[in-house]
Image (cartoon, rainbow, N blue to C red; front, side):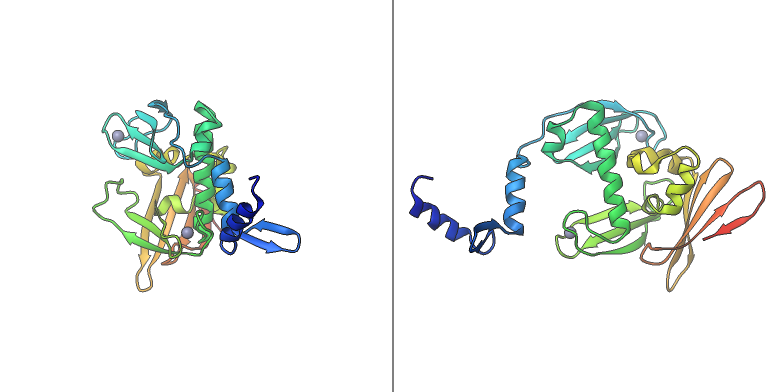
Length: 254
Ligand SMILES: [Zn+2]
Ligand SMILES: [Zn+2]
């Protein structure tokens, strides 16, 4: 702006919420910085279209390997072409789509969902950083396989985001699960949620309520003959874990 009095008028208007003034001049506030980065990344644009493209994994509802990914508004969405149900929907940003293609875009969706899951498990809202309160809800009529009829609902009181996940998936990023799978050649931290569906569909991952008032649950993640058990309280917090080896019949507590 050439007109300096106009400039100082506009800077003055932005003071408080968006700008801070000190002896050195103006600097961005938290809100100002968020908005500038939002504008620079052009995340107000519509993401470019993608797909439908086939992706690996099986449908959690019918077990078919018939998954297709596409973008639907702000979501990366996977549908099953066999039973025509939506299998997953993960938030995606226009910048995420603009700077990647095909496989690397899918990888970024997996990474984001794994990172989000890790934060949600530790009761932190990935959107705004506020504390989340979690509840376990029984859904006997759920279309999910019988292996897991519980859903964890985590609600952010600040930005009103709500996160839902099958109880079994909510513990996948727990260190006991990460280590158990890592020892068997699986990096669960690099997997997309839809890549866990086969474990649920085949009943290798299960959940069960073990006590009420207060409610307690156990999730069992099996691999081959071995398993890891994660015991949870009513807020879906893991309170104890145990490895089970079928050959020795021994438990290892931690
Ligand atoms: Zn299906
Ligand atoms: Zn939030």
